[in-house]
Amino acid sequence: MTLPNNDWHTESIDELIDVMITLDEPETAAAFLRDLCTVRELEDMAQRWQVVKLLDAGHHYRDISQRTGASTATITRINQWLQHGLGGYKWMLEHTNGAS
Image (cartoon, rainbow, N blue to C red; front, side, top):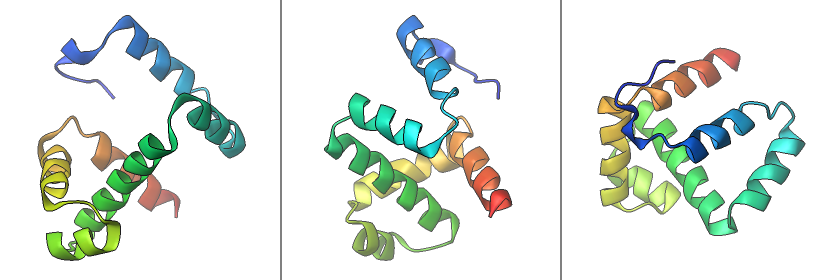
């Protein structure tokens, strides 16, 4: 995937991405993410992914908020990235839907 507007990339972020794409076992990925992130950061990322999947499935903001605990402001922001972002959410939805 070619990313437009790479101004957010730094050498450190690129190095982290390179490390993350080598994670090929769920246990290794879990151990790395747990060492790297706080539990709250992991919960926030998991919540965002749940919001993305519910948005993609056509759920309304109020339902998503009740199911995930995310605020409507957070859901709106995630939807903006889903619709107008770099395509990462859409790619992962297609990849994970195709794998199931």
